[in-house]
Image (cartoon, rainbow, N blue to C red):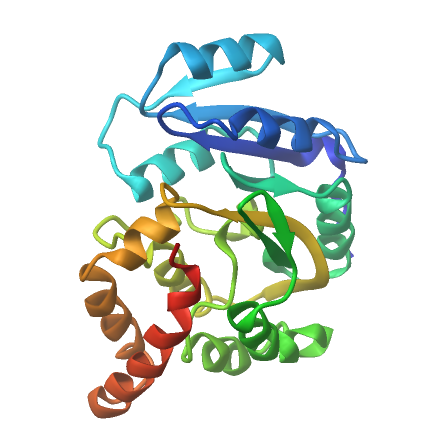
Amino acid sequence: MNHYDKSDYVFVICAYGESQYLEECILSLLNQSMPTGIIIATSTPNEHITALAAKYHLQVYVNDGPKGIAEDWNFGYQKANGKIITIAHQDDIYEPRFAQTNLEKINRAKHPLISFSDYGEIRDGKRVVRNRLLNIKRIMLFPLRFTSLQRVRFVRRRILSFGSAICCPSVTYVKENLPGIIFEPGYKGNIDWQAWEKLSRLKGSFVFCNDILMFHRIHSESATTVNIAGNDRTKEDYEMFCKFWPKKIAGLIEFFYRSGEKSNEI
């Protein structure tokens, strides 16, 4: 058993530009059933972010170093002064029991590395809990419903070998069990998948909660949509599959994976 408590839990909101959804994200974190720390990290400081931070009494940290999604996420992760960290995406919404449920499951796990939940999507302002992509990801993650399998490196890597079923903004990191740098610069669309592949090699548990505890917003300006639309994504997918499979098999899996990802396009 672990003994983390609410004082160990920190959300870091990675804010970029002037998102019209940032305030909704902040409110969903303030309305958690268990109070947590909340900070904002940004590499694009502006009046919009500053005003919202002041309104809700949140500390803002500005990344004056190298810029990029990986660099920004790593910056926010390092600035969060907690043992348990969730990197919240500014467009997304977190259900009231997100933090409390993650904390409870982490405390019951054996050497937890990350904790993550099932999720839904927000499309055109409406919550979606079922579509082809979501259903496929739930099938892929089914083995991790069993606590005993969450610690098995082979199971984690077989799941990841067919694609990235783990929703990045649903992930909570147990900082003391992880390396100092989580995300490796270089990838555009598969920064998170690359991180899960790296962490899957470590000894410990990938803790999975089968409840829908957050909603990921899909819209034309979201990073997910922009990255899928680019040709670099196909190349990155293939490179990731090659970490698990011979090249010919990797190419075949990538073809079917690309078809599934099209459901994220607007």
